[in-house]
Amino acid sequence: MSSYAPEKTDLFSFGLWTVGNPGRDPFGGPTRPVQNPNHLVRKLAECGAWGVNLHDNDLVPFDASASERDSIVAEFKATLEDSGMVVPMATTNLFSHPVFKDGAFTSNDPKVRAFAIRKTMDAIDLGVELGAKTYVFWGGREGTEADACRDPRTAVKRQREAMNFLTSYVKDNSYDLCFALEAKPNEPRSDIYFSTTGHMLHFISTLEHEEMVGVNPEVAHETMAGLSFPHGVAQAMEAGKLFHIDLNSQKIGRYDQDLRFGSEDPKQALLLIRLLEGTCGGERYSGPRHFDAHAYRSEDEEGVWDFARGCMRTYNILKEKAQAFDADPEVRELIASEQDEALEQLTRSYSSENAAALRTQKIDASAIARKGLGYERLDQLMIEHLLGVR
Ligand code: GLT
Ligand code: MN
Ligand code: MN
Image 1 (cartoon, rainbow, N blue to C red):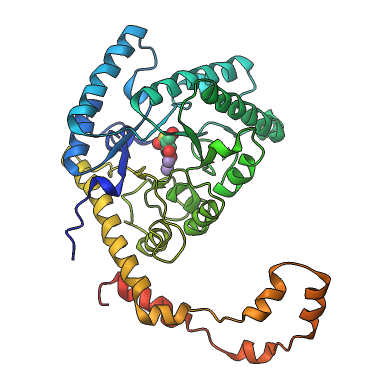
Image 2 (tube, protein in one colour; image 1 turned 60 degrees about the vertical axis):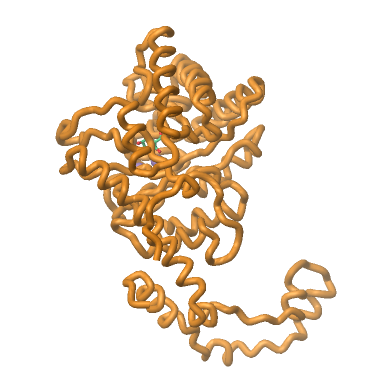
């Protein structure tokens, strides 16, 4: 059995905003001091993480002058260098400043939309300067309470215009950067546009440079919507669009909890890791394993590092369990599907001959229906692997 200690090759990353979360919630102020980004990077390196992600304003304050920006960035680059950490992903804060109270790219005010695009251009420059290869878009404020304020189709068009402008900006600057769109159904808005990964996948297919744009699904966000996270991720993978992933944990029907990875949903987390690590077949996901989560509000700084180590350790424990589950001969036997090459040939693609031949096939629906599938046994095996008795 391995020690489950994180290795650089695990590609574990955390946002500055995750381990830097001071424990604020809508009903109470911070319970921990705000930490310096350079300190967070050094501590993440000590914990065994590989990468650190950031919003523009996690590092450079909203109102910093150009020279302040440059000296902050220079110090941060030196810290990355010293600690051996990388910045795989960057993003823009388009939600904290009150100017974005009614959205950024979808706001009704053209000045707000222009400001959002300009802020994102600057933040893309910053991300690229720090080495980021993926740029995340989370439209937290792109939504409504009073839904009559705009035609939702206008919001879709405005979001498309912004994506087309910004992908062209990236190309024009010859940046090696792709975009990953992150969905969320609600919070902080009552209803957020493009509420699930599925909505995003279709939207991407309508963009000018769709090859540059994929998704960044988050466990908590799809779970809030009551959906299966592994199914959403699988659809993104099958479409070649899983460009990034936000790992955390969430109870269904709650506010966005962003809990320590695997803490509430070990079975769903195991199903997810089977996909990401390719233990159930198919291609392995080769991108960053990003933990977009934070420590409980009850914790002090030590608790924050317990939280960060916990995310990575749980991932590696579940990875071992996924490998063992998928290599278990009893599991393999239960999921081995029936083969009937001649029959499958007929339905693989349409022709009038195939359709006619299909009509002549003997298929005994009643006999098939009588046969049990053994899924109770299969699921029990998964539980036994999870509980450590197999
Ligand atoms: C914010 C949000 C996350 C997003 C981040 C990127 S910021 O914390 O809750 O889900 O991924 O903007
Ligand atoms: Mn997220
Ligand atoms: Mn979240």
